[in-house]
Image (cartoon, rainbow over all chains, first blue to last red; front, side):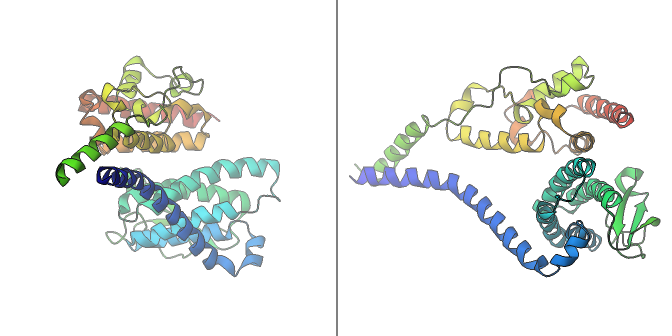
Length: 192
Length: 154
């Protein structure tokens, strides 16, 4: 009988190892959900005015997190962005807009997921932020920003291949080089 | 029987039981029409490297070694393949949007240059999957050419 009990316990602990991971994932997803629901609860009307409002505010949170070298802030912005993309009201999009949007949004969502999952890897977050900026820029070009934005370019990032980002301030705060060279870059375009 | 013996016996029995619980195999057994080699020009030597070093986790066709049937390792491996395929699946590359193709190619080059891929847990068992400097350069060069030609298409 004892043998059986030990065996049973061992079997359960094996199963538990397996389940632990899954339930951890599940509960993670839940916490991000609930925080995301709490934060942008207020401006529902404004969100209607511009479909990208929440997406942009999450994007800017990532940008500021990276500029301040705060991977955790960037990661929570990433999670908020994933959530914001899921909530965009596509019913008023034209067929063309819908096609553009779904390609861009799919990609942006994936980038945001990586940023959200790598709070301790600033450089990895930055790589995805570079690609994410491209997506968000294309979204803004299609749907408008609903707020003044600046397209800034840093020529030094990524082995001098350069990268751009969008900012809500005219002042340069470089998210790619962070505190090393906070003022590197220049405004290339003003968006509204 | 001492407690130690009983415990060992229990572990052994559990070990035997879990051998019968096998995860689904990632093996489609045929070349998918959306495979990266069907949509881009992929030279034979590049294909060879991709298949040896990447396809086990990043395609719908894993080449399973004999020990991959031993549990609980098979579960661990299955999870790796799941995550690998979610992030990059060469068998479904053709179904990605142009934007996603570009970004994936960029990320592949980056992770090879950084030597974050293929991961150590994989190359420790698959010595032939390790990328030499030459193979690194071969893949990165091919990616750069492919990205250039992709950016010229609509």
